[in-house]
Length: 176
Image (cartoon, rainbow, N blue to C red):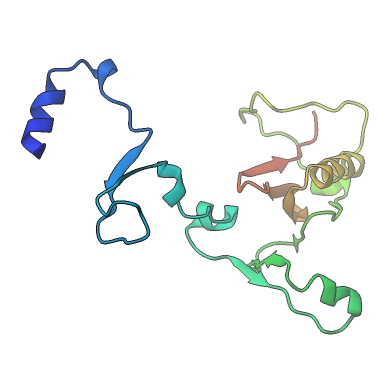
C-alpha cells in the first residue's frame, strides 16, 4: 500500500480509533537463515532503544563524572571504578563543603529579618533556640537527606543541591 493510500485510509478515522503502534513489522530481505527470504517478523520497538545515560549526563547534557583512581591504599583500589562528581570551587564562598559537613555560625552572623521582607510559605520559626543549635540541626538534616551544601557563614546562608540536581537555599534570620 502506498503512502497516499495509507494516509487516505487513516485520515477519516477518529483519533481514538487510530491503529496502535505496539509492534513494528519489517521485511527481512536478503537473509538466508530464515525459512523464507521474504518472511515478516514482528518486533517490539523497545528492543532498539539505547541504554539510558546516567543522571548527571541526562540533567546537564555533558559528561560530568570522572573516574576516581587511587593507588595509595588496597582499600582504595577496590573502589577505583566508582565515579566522583567534579566540583568547581568558588572563591566567594566562606566554606565549600560537601555532604556530611557541619554549618558553623555564631549568633552575631545571623541578622534580624528586614522590615518588609516576605517569607516563603515553607519558612519555620524556631522559638527558644540559638543560631548555632539551629544551624547544627539544619546541617544534620541535609546530611540525612544526602544533600550537598555550600555554607556561607558570614551571611548565615546555605546553597544546597540534591542528588537529583534540585537547587535550593536555606537562610537563617533572628527573630525580633
